[in-house]
Image 1 (cartoon, rainbow, N blue to C red):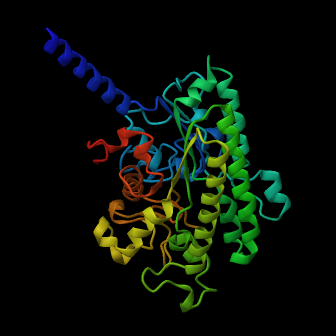
Image 2: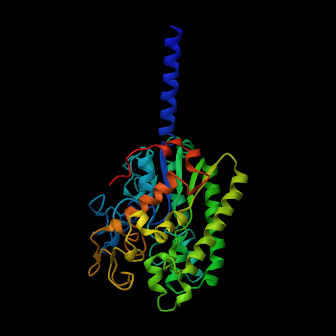
Amino acid sequence: MFLALATIIIALIRSTSSQSAAGCYESIVSFGDSLADTGNYPMLFESDSHTPSYALPPYGRTFFHRPTGRCSDGRLVIDFIAQRLGLPLVQPYITGRDRSFSKGVNFAVIGATALDFDFLRNIGFPNTFTNVSLGTQIDWLKQFLATIPDGRKFLQKSLVLMGEIGGNDYNHPIMQGSTFEEMQPLVQLVIHYIGSTIEELIKLGAETLMVPGNLPIGCFPFCLATYKDSSIAQDYDPKTGCLNWLNDFTIYHNQLLQEELSRIRELYPHAVLIYADYYNAAMRFYLSPAEYGFSKDIILSACCGGGGPYNYNGTGKCGIPPARSCDDPASYVSWDGIHLTEAAYRLIALGLLQGPYTIPHITTACPAFNRDDQVYQY
């Protein structure tokens, strides 16, 4: 009887441990821009006569087989994270209050900035795409939390994804041809605002937050096309063909962000702040394309675009003729010149979830991310 009882107890312990690992977060709360938006942007403009290009084919062709409002041919990093946790794909908040958000809610919006719309306009870098900022999304969160029984507990049991956010604060100056030096003061403001928002979320109850850095924008077709007439040979990395100074600018942003996270960790030691190194998780594609299944000849080109040296130009946006989509998106890193393909997002997600591109390693916060399953198969 003793042996039988011991066996039952051990089995219960193992079962409880397994359930805890697989369900360490009950939901996902997401903020950010087009790297995380799962459908908010088209819903914000559904009453307009103009349909956003992101809501048109061939967006969504690879996985969903229809446009979903995601800026890719398929899934985003947030989708892969949800699948790894055994959670449903995170619902966009604007889709309607009648939907259940018990397993996750997404406030990210395509084109959103970290800094306030009016502030950016006043300093000469207006967001011509949307007036939604990180502050707007936090206001939406507070409205949402007021509608559920225990908002603080909901946040405590959620994995909070902080973007990526901040990239659009820089994209508009970049499209105006701004230099590193001209944009540098803006970085301090962006990082400070992201940091203060993280602190506010912790005070509201958030305990685990994943905070991504920015991607290597010096390798993006829209940046390469923007500066192709003003750059000289020395501006390009001979190993990748990417613009060095734009990647250096991204590294500068990411360094300041990590310093800010270190500061916040000291103030709130009970909170788990995970830095997601999007930059290096993606940079390996450009350094060794074939190793990750990408074609070297098109590594800096967009799959869907209207032509030009990098298959990107402002008058031929993906989704709007005469722009055309490539036959095999999985062989490209860039989907539309600004956003990545599902194949690239999948590999970035794997780099975060299986290592080594999170600080601290994400599995220390949730062992479920070590599961060896097939959720990433096409």
